[in-house]
Amino acid sequence: MSRRKISVAVTFPIWPPRGGGQSRIFHLYRHLAKTGPVEVICVTNANDLPSDREIAPGFREIRIPKSRAHRMAELELSRAVPGVPLSDVAMPRLVHLTPDYRRAVEASVADAGIVIASHPYLFPLLREVTGGPIWYEAHNVETTLKRMMLPDTPTARALLAETERVERACCAASERVIVCAAADGQAFRQDFGVPEQRIIEIPNGVDLDTAEYVGPEARRAAKDRLGWGETVTVLFMGSRHKPNCDALEVILRFAPICPNLRFLILGNVCRHAEGRPVPSNVGLMGEVDDAVKITTLGLVDGALNPMAGGSGTNLKMLDYFAAGVPVISTRLGARGLAVVDGVHLRLSDIDDFPATLRQLQVEIGGPELAGRISASRRLVEDEYDWAMLAERFAEHIGRVARSRA
Image 1: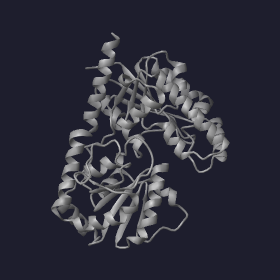
Image 2: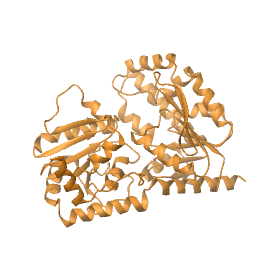
Image 3: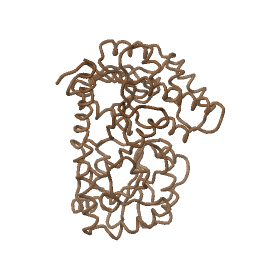
Image 4: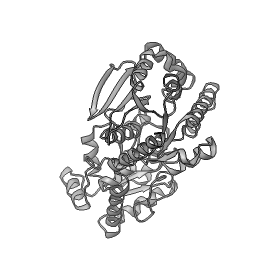
């Protein structure tokens, strides 16, 4: 079944995908592009080059750099709210300073069947340039997330109030609201008055075409080849996003009381620890390419997700499961996923992570751990394959199109 073009407005570039939001947009829409063309129009850094390229069959990424005026105004805001990335929350008030972006969006939406605000921040611009249907893809409940992240200062309070106004307006006007987790849908119903029939749940997924499953025996052999010996190594990965930074602080706090474990940290969350000493058993790998990520996932003995905040679901959990890595997570870190404690993973309170890690050391090589690894891999195959989720998304689009006819 073919359909009219979908145009997606995003506040950041998506290729190559590194963070969770980039991965969701890239993988979900590249599979959706099998049923019809998709264009993603991205605001990118002022020092980036403009581009318009096909990044998968039928799937285009159009990058528009911020103007110098846009960048300078954003820097001025950042001085008033130091330490918190503001590119997204500042977008409703600053995007007019990059007129090339407006022109690119106008050109894309002119022949689009559906226009999607991926995050709410570009909704006001979309409402200005199209009278057609707009959908809101909510990666999180942004108002809730930014309330946790922004400090209590006059400028930050103003930005938070603007975020709430924009998200509320986006929810009110959107033909459909796409959520990653049922809890987010419930929040939109209760706090923003979105009717249940307008909410579509499309969970986060994993790319099973590229995820390499490594079983326990192959994992031990890979460790031996690398010379890692008997040292149990656990992984945490994430972007420089406040919930991830808070989780990294947790790991840095309990790593010294687990001296016989090695902790690897992967992703630009490592920048949060720049310029200060870290425990000797913590390795900061930084942002890496896909090959290094896949190799690392095939070597480690376990993966951690000590999250204490955030909304939506954590894609890192699905990467861990797909690769065959046993997982220890808080309940909040596993939110929105159809997991059962003791079946797919170990759930733990943050203060109990050291004890749960000691239990993991005992379980390595045993049948109970092997059972959890197998169950979690089956779970992602059955419920969280991006190709399958895109098919579900396409079915919803088709039903809405037929209801309009």
